[in-house]
Length: 488
Image 1 (cartoon, rainbow, N blue to C red):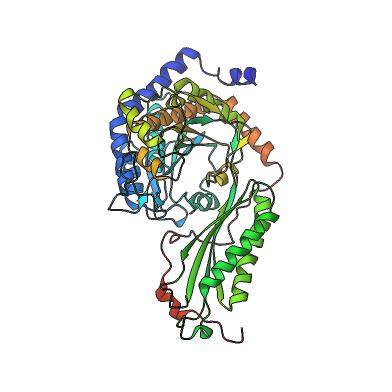
Image 2 (spheres, rainbow, N blue to C red):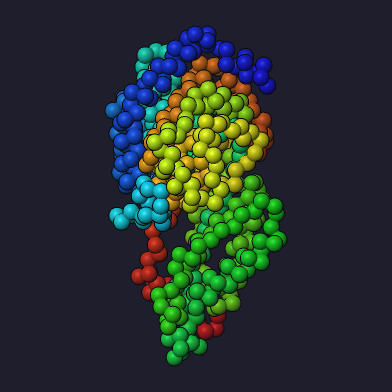
């Protein structure tokens, strides 16, 4: 493997490679202050999935000012866009995200302190993700403009990664059909790269419609939608024992009624189900659906299923992953200065598994593993060679999807991690542009991993993007729902 990589990385003379890569880093560093200001605006806005109007517009404006041509409404999603610079092959895609998470609003302080103006928070660091990716794309565009690189760089503005699966719809619309390779990254509490997969995931909301009644005065006349949810959840708990290894099932009750003395006529439960292999996940979801159907049957309520689609597991690409890993190892210059250590120490007191602060200087090779999270990058990886990595933007030991991650996202450590990510993205893209052997090796590996299995998404035929998945159910629609009869 080492000899193979040496051959791939020697396509451009070493002196020229160093000088041209330094130009990429200079470009990124020159715009570091502007990039950080953009990231902080997106952090403050904290817009939900498919509602990121200001965040997506800001990123598009950054790219347009650098000479990119933008196209809006990708896959009929208002906040999705592509921005392109250059012409011809290869076409290298750089993915960017910008949606926030519910219930994780937080000030940039090391104790729990939600912001008053919003309930949303960037607890997955997507405010950093989108900006670093845009910065890397701009640096590559400058080298194309100067004639040092040949080809096209394309930024993909991808909304609603957190459950909305926008990239799946973008793949379905053929937006990656001519893309030769795609790169992505993610904020984390440590630096890592390598040949790593993820869990496939299906999301669905089960909505139950019953009959309201006085819970004490006329309980026999009510049909409780909340009872249907509780039976669904109980059946699902029993199901867990009989699922394949590495299955993950989680849920939240998004609506359980209005008052204890009113039999709930409407209730909703939101489920995720995951597994390392999409082919195993499909029949698992069918069993989950049966649990919901049983809940409706037992309570004489009506079930409505809002199937929000699914995302596939990441198809690893070792040829690209090893190059990204090498760049991350060479460029990692992260440390937590003495002046920032009191913040880190205070925040670590709230963590269950804090790690040494010096960990930000390490790079972990995660080749041959799979993560227990899910991402719609998975669907992209099935249609084009794809690789990603993480950088330490949070205090070591900080879990994603936590208020601590939101707090860390507005600190100097987040800024340094974002800058490192932009440099690694740009360097890895530069390696692909300047080394045809590397790109061909990545494509050959991709063909081998896909084999004879044709890509198939977990969407229903003709399924539209769930643009309202972050909005609460509309109770005013209950009156138009057909209620179950006593004979049911």
